[in-house]
Image 1 (cartoon, helix red, strand yellow):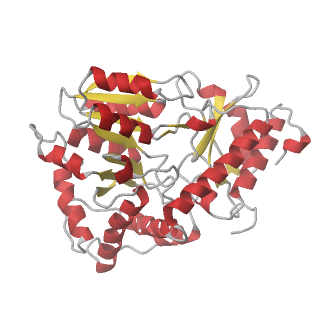
Image 2: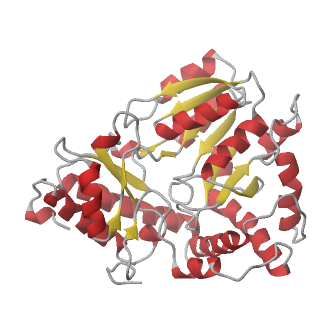
Image 3: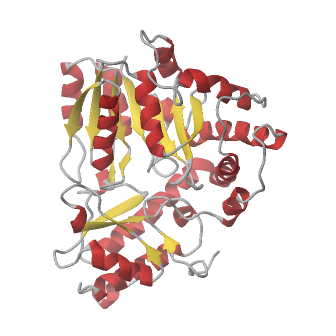
Length: 391
């Protein structure tokens, strides 16, 4: 679609995930019932595993593609890589950083939460100090915390870990970042990327994707205690992933066949025409447009500076006179579904726009529709916007 028009009969879903999907992805998801032993599916599943490596920038890491939400990736990581009593440093920039910390504690980790001020991320010097103070099994960083739109400094964290604690695993929550924000798994020294199908990967919800370094798999192999889980135990899933990549069937639990078909189609689209560098650049251009529009409305993003702002989404502070409860229905009436805030104590003070996936990478006019609708809805809610700022 090249014109600025929403799909007929429904508003655009422009929240920070699930995202709008291409017609080819939707068609792939609408295939008839197919056995997970079907040679066609076996080939597609193998391709998905291989293409995910290209998306995150790794040659040797192992993708796990399992039915579930992005949150299941937290459980996978905590259950397989952290043993009870071991220390984990969680860099928390919002709601999802706190959730990951809770998950780690559920599996017995001793968690240190290094919290940033709302809209900001931890200074590298503060992280370095924490790494010097204690031995950590893992450090986690949300590349984008969906509650705030803050961009974590994954590359900076990796460099600090190499300098101060090289045995520590670097775990990246990339659920709202992978395939939108720049990430170079091997070059930076990442050990785990947790993501999901329904955001910038551009497919329907239903697939938990976790990419794991060989170093981290070595940690799994060297555990002193059994993995305290059944479904998310990588010792059960690793033979499945390797078998499908070798184009052979092996069974542990039924994969989500149609969603994997859809994900494969989306990965094909991501990796075509310039590959991930083109995808990253498209998200950066789109994000710049959205941030410029926010400034033209006289509003501020929750992220305190461009340096800490995600390109996949934008969280916007509202004037005290406007609440998401009144703004969001006005946006929907103009053909755009946006999201309210979810940060505890501040949820009523801001709203969120998602602009990842095909909204950023395809010439479909979705960003034009979103910005025009947001400007008009804000004006209807009482915000004064100059005529030159209407988009």
